[in-house]
Length: 255
Image (cartoon, rainbow, N blue to C red; front, side, top):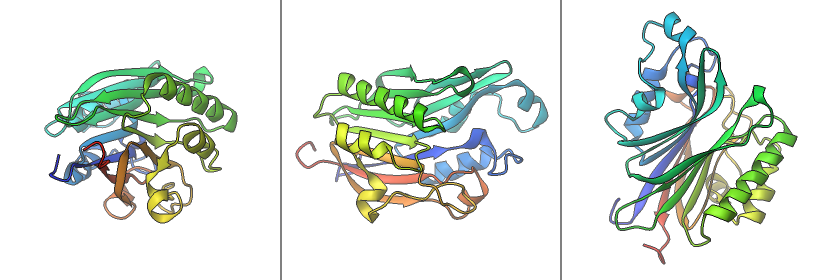
């Protein structure tokens, strides 16, 4: 942590390590780009835990878990939650952190088996600072499932996160209609980082022509300092989503 008690986070749907077209395997380039930013905490969606068929097809396929590969050498602490399991592998959400996890849990919010989803909730300890609750989300494509998942998320926060505790919820909300605002702002008293600074959500998908505002970073108990949508090179040649890079400061009353 800096003298000003600032820290930065990145939320990124990495498309299982493939380019926006799904043809090129670009996980090594993704790691290089993320390492260069060097955020304190990463919220990652579509992390490939295992894929037997792709491992045979791509010569440079990493042998370890994608979360472990991305964390290697930079983020000592990481957790992974499966939200899709199939015959040849699985994928899900991951949180990588330079600070240790006190506890973490993966909450199943699947609407049906063919579209498995989960919420990855962790509590991170920053020495000399309040514990920070972090939740990595990747919600469903259909309104009815997202509403149920958002309701479950609200219940989880209200039952497991103290009102005074710093909280960051980040990920791919698949919420181009902005229905999530009712849950995040009204029920949980959260603000969205890019919207606070610019008046609107970031257009983050698809990367070649960002039009949909699906990737978000909601927060409370911290102050947003800056938020960038990373949609130019090298990011434009990587995943089909643009990541969001956010700098936070612990609120003055908590620092």
